[in-house]
Amino acid sequence: MISFFRVIKFAFQGFFRNFWLSLVTVTMMLMALFSTTLLIGIDYIKEATLEGVNKKVDILVSLKVDTDREDVELLATDLETMTEVKKVTIITPEENRVLYEQSNLDEQAKKVLEIFAPDENPFGFSLAVQANNLSQYDAILSFIGQDKYKNLVDNSDFNDFDTFVAKIENLSKVINKYSWYVILAFLLISIVVIFNTIRISIYSRKDEIQIMKLVGAGNWFVKMPFILESILYAVASVALLIVVVYPIINFIQPSLNAYFQDVNVINILEYFHSNFFRIFGLQFLVLALINILSTSIAIRKYLRI
Amino acid sequence: MIQVTNLFKKYGKSTQALKDVNFHIEPGEFVSIVGQSGSGKSTLIKIIIAEEKADKGQVVVGGWDITRIKEREIPTLRRQLGVIFQDYKLLSKKTVFENVAFAMQACGFKQKDITKTVHQMLALVGLKDKENRYPHQLSGGEQQRVAIARSLVHKPKLLVADEPTGNLDSINTREIIDLLKKINNLGTTIVLVTHNKDVVNGLKSRVITLDNGVLISDQSQGRYLL
Image (tube, rainbow over all chains, first blue to last red; front, top):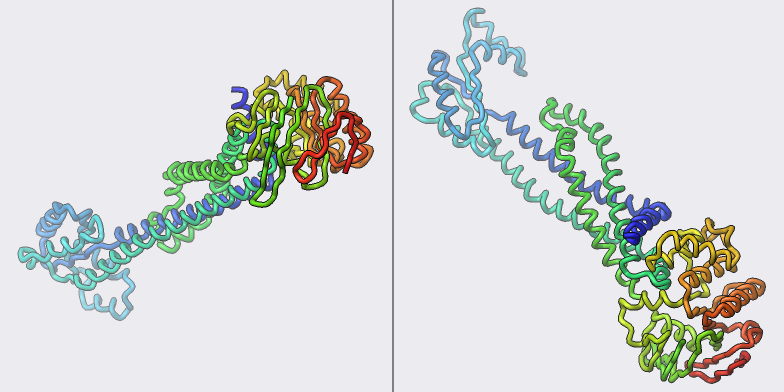
């Protein structure tokens, strides 16, 4: 028990008395962790962007002008029974008119409405149909295209939309496929960097290790402070990572909101908050494990004296 | 205390460091091992403290055949010896007190005993007022005295000194040798490796001379021959 406390004391002494060496080691680890965290952040932004696009995409089904509200509601109910459908919104003729007036169409196009009397509305009902995910739009389109709805559906620009959906879906698959290679490459580079940092740190203190052995210290008594010190490196690196990452997130969040013109598409701050232990805790555990392994391997040859 | 029988050690294929070396050292003796650079004296010390393994022969230290020592037994052997080196081998990030205490901490002594003994040893080597200094804040002679205090702190029966005055001026050399004589008078066996002629001649004690790995002379009240 006495030895155990001594080992802990020596670990802290080693960490703080070799301050510059500890600082360099922690900085190297911080860089490795930062690149991994950056990758986690980019991965989240990618996922959130695709999800955001998914949310914003819907099928707008224009119904014939004379369609009754009851028939519209019936079609909406039919659509809602589909497992692929997430949400169906009925847009009334009045709402359609307002939307047309507020749209980005040029003034010439908007003047068309002047032909009609103020109490006359050339628009009918529409349905905005949202799927659970992009791949389900095909099924919804087929459902709407059934013969029994032909009398209701006036206009649908399905083909272009289909291509758009396919492109986004394909892009998502490509990104997902290659992001794994990038993540693996980053992880590998980080592990190599950390391992070599520990090796250099141990190498620079090899004399200390050999002296301890020459005055009669056993392998355990020499090795344990270095192993505990390597865990302290992990603690310091992750603590610094948190200190560095949060201001950066706070800084970029408004830019992301502005880019997507919506505060709810990408909330990276919320993502890091809700996954705090998964992101930082897991990185700490993995780093501590790599450090322990690297230290045990690096110190081995200097203990043979 | 030490029995060396038919000891051989070779580095590589052609460098014969020790060739059929035989001698016996009694408890309480002060023995100087002399020889020129490359004569095998440091190799002999490295074998005695189990830093190197002999190729052939037997070395018994305090009844322990260290030519057959297992790796896990080496710390136990070293805790029974005191060793001092030419380059002092102090832990640079530990204070004088901590350096001396480390040898006892490694043995698992209680903190109360460590504090008491370390203070006694630092008083013996004349460094009681410098216990909170770091090695780089001390002179060479003072650093060597810290190393001596560390080597004595666990009360070894044998003290091995490998060129302890090699980096010191004549005044510090005399002080260190006087300290070793004092320790010897208290009953500790001393094995001193040196190539300092004045030191050896001034000691008027047993001298073992090595030349090219061969023991060429063993005189009970010898002088530096080479």
